[in-house]
Length: 112
Image 1: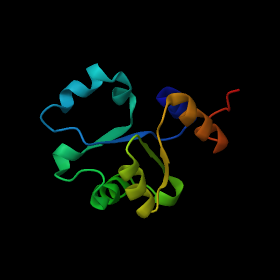
Image 2: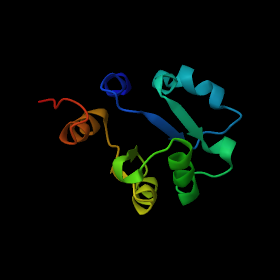
Image 3: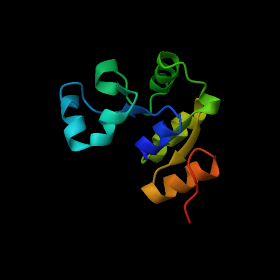
Image 4: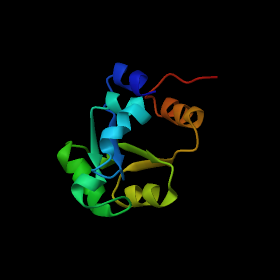
């Protein structure tokens, strides 16, 4: 999905609560992380989701308009915090559901 979004010209960024000391393990464990444009790592920043400051930092650092940015996460508290900061937000349940949501938003072709 990351590759499909990037091929469509859509920026794909990461925001993770990974520790700074172990983030070097991220790409081997989850190779898609290495294909993201950039990742904000809470362990490096000293603030973690769902703290609203990390969403503000993400937006400022990467020149994002929260109202035009979709945030997805598998933790309801993080999704709500992003909503409170003005991001469009969806709870991640599985890849097919996210792909459908992205299709409904016109970001990816809809699947049947």
